[in-house]
Image 1 (cartoon, helix red, strand yellow):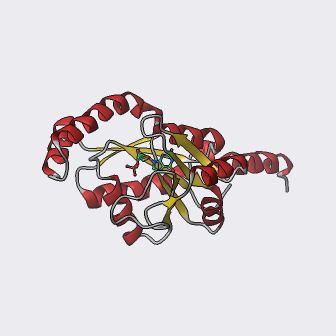
Image 2 (cartoon, rainbow, N blue to C red):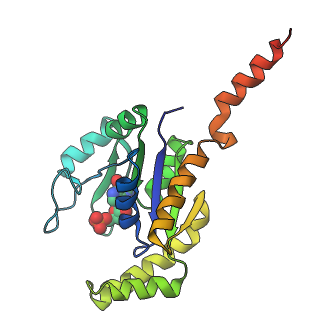
Length: 209
Ligand code: 5GP
């Protein structure tokens, strides 16, 4: 088992994922955020290697061929690829860091299939009323964009139960501390302690005076 935990975070837009991740990393130094690769063009203010690794389609496709990605998705709407570079995550897990992937459902399920020890957490506001209030009060998007986020939430709600934990972001500090506790506790789950259990069960056989 890796020394660190691969933590996959998904959740409704407006749930406060980004804020939680930022605060988690400020508070606890054992977390590191994976930076995704994408073929979409940078938006204003976005920096290569900070927000994403912005790659050409050819480069991205060769990353797929070379098995350099832990997971990837191709969004038919935008035609863009998004993926998680494997080497960065593996190296940091080996170094004992908890690596955070902030990715959507398709990617989360791919990760879980490949890495059953990955921890999947879905972040949500305490209610849909609150989600609506947060998306509207951001004041940064048009009515059309907000409506499109509502539609995405309708698609995402049914898949919440595929995640292992639901983190309710009501109070930020509490949510951050709860997430940290979930990550810690998850390491002691029986399914993640298989090899330890096998060792104990094997060694107990020869137990004698
Ligand atoms: P945006 O283009 O707005 O930055 O992101 C669009 C979508 O891509 C978001 O839902 C985001 O979670 C998802 N995304 C970002 N990085 C990755 C990744 O590495 N893998 C997958 N599967 N999705 C990603």
